[in-house]
Figure 1 (cartoon, rainbow, N blue to C red):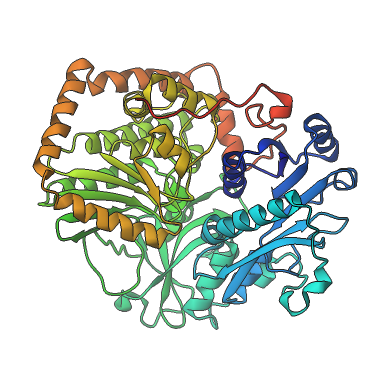
Figure 2: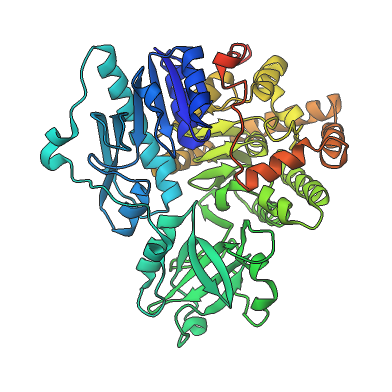
Length: 580
């Protein structure tokens, strides 16, 4: 079919739908929902068989849905209506939830039903559920809907679903609905409220006299000596940028907040950075990556060993890696290299592997160009630490999405495995023509060839795990869930550690690295990349700084990029294939 994707933004679900539809052989073009006239123009130019709307914040114009079939992907069970579907499902402690594909009509979420899919509602944040269960259900339901259209089927009117339509119309969730009552809400309730608002808009609250929105909450089952007798809501400890607040039955870590009023920057940032001197009397509660605990807690980096396999986890919020995080991860990795293991697994986090440098922290810095420079150098130091691993084989286990420098960080490992369903964006250009570093000019061509590297970095398109394998970017993809992916990676890591040719593999790795270094030193790649990056950060062209500002402040797009809007541009380049 000829399909127009109509979306508020090119978010994770829209990207997954884009790559899946293209893989199924459909002709796909994208238009951002800017206004009615632009949408109508896009339909007139592309003349689609179907318009698919995976992520909208307003109704499709009447002139569009009356003229062409429009499918709306709604993150709710059959009958659910309203803009806060997933928020209410989490807040109400639903045990199952779903996605419904509707045919657009004059009312939001009220059209006839083409397909639906349900799933168990995991105890997780709204963003995590959206990137995993909602996305998988949406892809499955959309496939079913398009298959029905292809065979001439008709949708089912909503009332005919009877007791299947257990959803209901609900209003947008307000901050009064999200508010935490620290005197009455137990830890589970606090977590549920923050998780239902995670990503956006956060939970409005007051911390030490500062009005802030709360994000990214985690239970704490230890530190009883700090929280004992504390008034619920009190900040009792801090760790790695996060704050620990007492609850009526335990405590919760809040890793990020956003200032609700007062001076700029009003960005989502580590809680300690926003609260600053207000935390001067709050004690630190450090927890090293390799310390094992028997209770729930939070830390940004964790290291564990299972026999001859070391596992390094770094579930950084939204996959962003600031200067201090890169330095801490490099130190943890260096310690892991010094241990008597045979394989090191770099596991990242369940939602994101890495998205490269931390744009919010850079935007909030007194001198963003200088912080950009510090951050990219810290990323480069980390990548080089991994590339120069001599005593172990290394595995990048990409269970979550990755973008920009985060993708090239993974290529520093000997083997790259990607969860089937993860989305990769191996390019920088969309961030104001940023050139990029992380030794990508060395790491990418050695996997996909020079022409493949050019196509990926210039094409600026998302790619599926299967496309990454076909292009040679990754070695394999498997498992639909993060849990199943981790189990299979563990099995493969242990098999690699016990392989009969393990020593020969290490020797071959060392020989290749020595040959590569003799042909061109790593320092030369880094120097060339950073010379380009210096111009991005400090040069006369402000494109990077403007693009970063718009990205972190979520400024709506004024137009659809031409590499996505095929109805307005030249054809999308084909993805590269693995070199012979």
